[in-house]
Image (cartoon, rainbow over all chains, first blue to last red; front, side, top):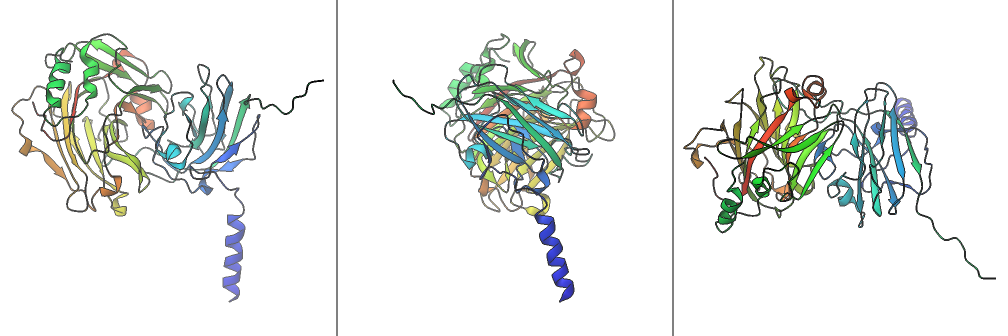
Length: 183
Length: 257
């Protein structure tokens, strides 16, 4: 009995060590900028998609998913830095006028911001749209392509590549009218 | 690209074919890919171009260069399939400038995706370029299958018949339950003629593929390079360019040559 209780206690401690990571069914909403959350860990995510950006790009390892609503002309930049040995890749899907789990998982392209995995372990990936963005919901997704090696006998298979990362989103969000009066 | 492709494809439309993105190649003008639903380019200096010098009598071809970026992609996309439960497609793939060294030298060259995830996957058919331990250029043909023991992928590796030029790749996908879901393929030198529908080779689709419902979105081009591909074959250099041509897709009829 004592061993069981100790094991249960250890298990609870481990699961509470990670913050809850956003998924396509429940993305972490970004409602103000700059957005500099505490370090996340994709190992703690329940999202294990094998492709992103309308299914056109293969990914390996779990994802952390954030959502943000932008209006036309908003200038936003997204960057993520992995903690070595984690080699992150960054994707921004959108815009979509009808945000949903399906839109995030399979129905939205990455044409506005794009996607990048230009640096190695511990490096910073940054996406800034080349032109003004359109109105809609965007999904910011942290994942990895680093394990996409497979073997000489078979194409690459999904792996458990994941780790700790720090996300930063900067720029301006849509302005809301807080009050109006005529004197 | 055959100058008469568009006419040919329109004629085929009445013979159980459906909208075919290959009509985009009718005019050999760089950037003229308007018949495709979209062009998707990103990651480093990736690019998609239409250039002269098509294969097997066609006027021009699609040229892809892959940037040195794990999320690199240079693709055209066809959204015209409508959850197709039978989907046949063919294209010419010329990896003349790629290295055949190392089996982990891999990049995706074709995707036929479903509309929604099943078993966490979208790709009903995925074709990858790959090197080998012996230095041969190969393609991996991967079909979705409802078999967790193989990570829901049923696949085969084919050494390209033409190691120094264009190859013609065709497949025939049937979506259905275990025993009904099927995937056949043909990989030949682009100049080989007299191909027969019955000559296709089957990849067992263990567990079937009904959960993916049907083909909804198709990507042709290069995407998702492996680390080793990036180290030996990426970059916007003339000695690393890859070419595609003569894409054709249909619901039923064998395309052949």
